Each structure stands twice: as C-alpha cells, then as structure tokens.
Length: 171
Image (cartoon, rainbow, N blue to C red; front, top):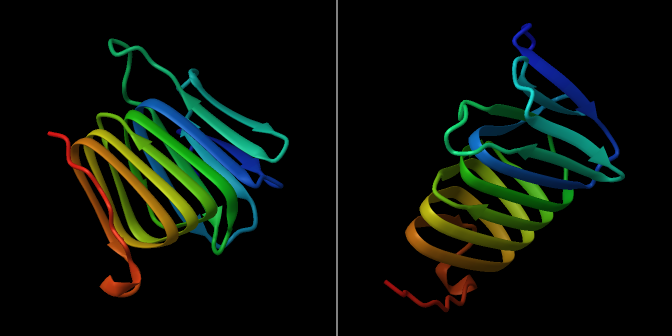
C-alpha cells in the first residue's frame, strides 16, 4: 500500500465502521500502528471515504456495467474494538483478518466473505443472498443467521453444548 498506486486516508477517533460496497474487493487487516488507514486505488474516483463524527463511512457504488475493479484496503490497529460494524457487500468480495466489535452486522449479496482470524462480537448478524460466508473463528454471545442461497460456515468458539441453535431452511 505504500507505493504510489494507492491513496491513503488516516483516521482516528472513530468507534463505528460502515462499509457499503456494490462491487470490488475489500481487505481488512491489522497493523501495529495507532491510526486506522484506508487505502484506495489512486485512479479510483468513485470510492468515498468519509469520517462523520465517530463513524468511518466507506462507499463503493457502481452500476453493473461499469468498472468492477475497485479495491479497498483497511488497516486497523491490533486489539482495536469497534462499537458497531456494518459490512454490506452486495457483489463485492471480502477478506478480513480479524475483527472485534460490540455489534457486528454483515450482509453479503452475490459475493463471498472470508474471515481468516478471530472475530469477536457480543451481537452478530449474518445475512447471505447468494454466495458464501466463511468465518474461521467466531466468538459471539448472540448470533443470528439468514441464508437465502449459498453457504454460511461459522467456526464457533467453545463447545457444542454452549449453543442453542434454532433455524429454518426454505429451499
């Protein structure tokens, strides 16, 4: 990211993260610094990165026939805890190293989201249209999952008897 191909926005003092991506690729990883860094391709004029009070907002909007090659990279300080995280990946793919939040809401439309490290959230909501969500390690007290078509894999912390599962399958 430190090359001339990326625009970097440094952010501090935010507690909430709100990402809406119509297309492209999202990558979230940790770093040893103290600021949040958002990298966007230098030639990308349509991706919006804004700080509104204590909320970091990232918007990638495209129509299906436009350039779909949008890339957003977010570097978060290690052990950073968000109050609220909203990820809305319509037809955008996501790769998340690890994430900690009080509340986590994830919507994946027709794409894939892979979370390779530990995800911690008191409350987590997962919604999948058509695609896949794969979370290697989830620690959450209250989990809600909706899946229309596709596959949701959640590697839950703890033992099987720690959980009560209730669900419906429609098609």
